[in-house]
Image (tube, rainbow, N blue to C red; front, side):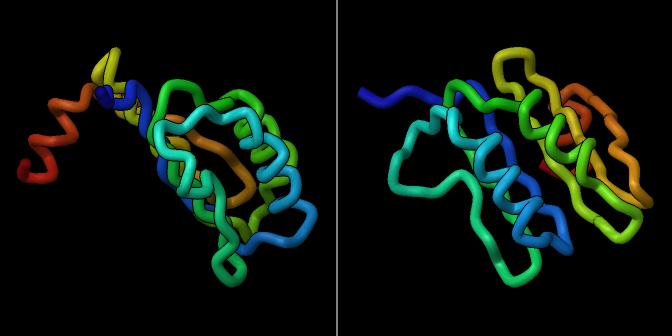
Length: 114
C-alpha cells in the first residue's frame, strides 16, 4: 500500500561548480524519498536540480549550504510544497541572496489556473 508524500521539494541553481554540487549532494544525503530509484539531486550541465517527494528532506542543511555558497552570479529557486500544512515556501537565489516567500497552496493553484 503506497501513501502520498507529505513533502515535495523541487528546485535548481546555476551555475554550479564542483564544490557547491558536492556540498549540496552531501546535504541531501539524509533525504527519505518515497521512491528510491530517482536521485534527489542531479547535475545537468552547470545546473544542480533537486527533485524530491517523500517524508523527510533536510531543508535546513540544504539552505545552510546555499546561504554559504550563493554568489551574485547564481540564479535559481527551491520550492517546498508542504502537503500537511498545505503551503508553498519558495526560496529564490539571485544577486547573492536567498529570499523566502510563502503562500497557501490554494492561492498558488488559483493563480496557476488549476
